[in-house]
Image (cartoon, rainbow, N blue to C red; front, side, top):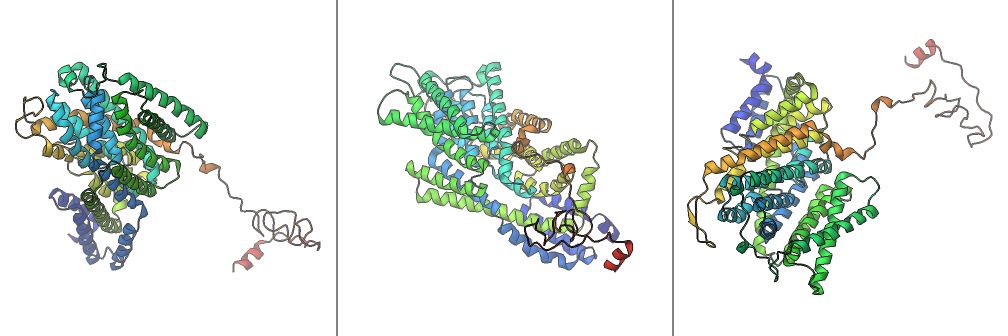
Length: 587
């Protein structure tokens, strides 16, 4: 038995951790207890030294003093202030009225608002619950298919896992030892590409099955002009003028070949500022040039968009670190809530309580992960994982495919925090040794981890939606119609098409790494093979000996006039040392 434990300590330790998690024990305590238990067993068997745990306090202190993790409470607080100050309601009402006249317009509005909430809250529960409470009754009122409606809401909420500033990306960057800013840059395009794929699916459903995603009726449209129009042309003209100003501004502010994410962020900031200024002047001077919907869209959507892209822009350009950007975003959210007159002590306390709870949750899991990894590395678990994964066929691509399949399978039972703190520290060093870009790996895992919130029957996004979806038939207050309840089966079936889309996105990131690795496109490429170090010849640093010019200068000496010193005669050049001289020097 003792020989078995000594030979297979690492796999037994990992298997015990999986068992504890499946039994429902808290993740942080499962990790810490497992690490301490097997550490004591290893000491008793003579496999580990008692001095191993002397490094534990330093590891815990290292977790507490990690400045990168300060971005977690800052971005969480920013999102909660924006969400609880009524931003979600305003956005859903405005975007719903804008796209409502189109088939599938309400679903498209939910996806777009979900992407915006993802870029502000970074928390799945806040996004799903907000949109479930606000938009689900409206979608049911106008006859949306229940599976489509629930699937759109749950999937849009999970966008907060991949769209910066995501908490998942912060944790992954920390665990992989990479820059949070680089992780944000790498995830920028995949996040918005996934949003576009969701919208394409809704458009396809609206054309293939028109009854599943009907347009809202004319009587439900609130922003109507005196002439009976909806004011969309006015909005289009305003947006077109703003785009022209943004194009001109980008040419003046940026270099000839700007970075992709820097170009996008700067363009959106200029576009938003131009639209807001023009709409503000129109309202202030009472020019009457803009329609109601144009003013509503500008004043509701531009401020949160400006805050989001101002935070991301300062990080991408390099003006601020992610921690500083998060602090700036938190202050900006407080200012926006104050301007809307929705900031009060109750809202502030709720946001601070939730932020503290989530931050403590992350820190405790990270401390437990540190205890586990200390013992796991002590029993050579890292070498076991390395030998297990490097022996896979297919090289880098084979490794990434297996890791993706493993993450997809574990996502049925574990949420993204558990996956990030357990799986990533094991596979990260192996991927680095194989020459895999760790930012690419991190974004790939982030896209894959979204499925942990969508998997029936354990997906948390499905549970959040189930908690706010109607469990009994009810009568709608506006139309007076009897609305049937939403069943759990309908929520589960509605999630499956979006899980398939997420898996397709994983394949796209695997097949086209350039959509992630563009973050380093503007960096100089260095070929290690071209680097050489001139060690010189015997007698000095560089090419000259002490009497032949000293440090790198083959002609001058310390006392020669050529070297700028005194005009003393140069010392005679020494003869080449013999083997006896070498032996005498190093005896």
